[in-house]
Image (cartoon, rainbow, N blue to C red; front, side, top):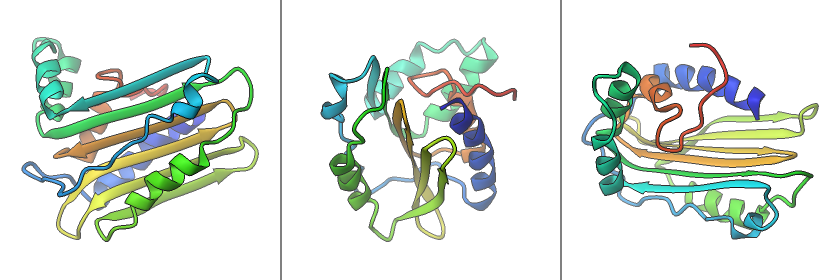
Length: 182
C-alpha cells in the first residue's frame, strides 16, 4: 500500500487541476459505505471510521489552530459533510469482498460520479480506483478503493473541499498519512 499511497498524492494533485470542490456544495444522496464485516475477523488490523458533519465539527474544535498542520486540516474539514475510512491489513492473502465492492460501485453508476483513475499492477497485484462525484460545474466527493494482496482500503470524502488541499488531512481524522515527502 506504500506504493499506492505514494502515487495517490500525485493523482489528487492532477485531479485538482481538472476539478475543484467548492464551498456550499451538497450531495443530494450520500454514499453508503459498507463496513466490510466479512473482513473484520480475518484482518490482523482494521479501522472503521465514520465521521458525519456533526462529528467533523466536533473534531475540528480539538484541532489546535496555532499549529500549522492542524490549522490547515481545520480549514479543509470546515466544508466537509463526511469522512469514511475502511482499512484492513492481513497476515496472508484474503478473500476480496467482491459483493460489497459491487454494491458500492453500483452507487457510483449515477451521472454524478465519474471514474477518474483506474490502475492495475500485475507485479504488485494491486488495483486502485479513484472516483470523483459532481457535475461539470462542481465536484462534491472523492472515493478511493485500494485492493492489494494483504491490504484493502476504501476512503470516501464528501462535501466542499479543494482537492489540492486534500493532503492537509493526512494523519488527521483517520485519513492515512502518505509516506512521501511534501
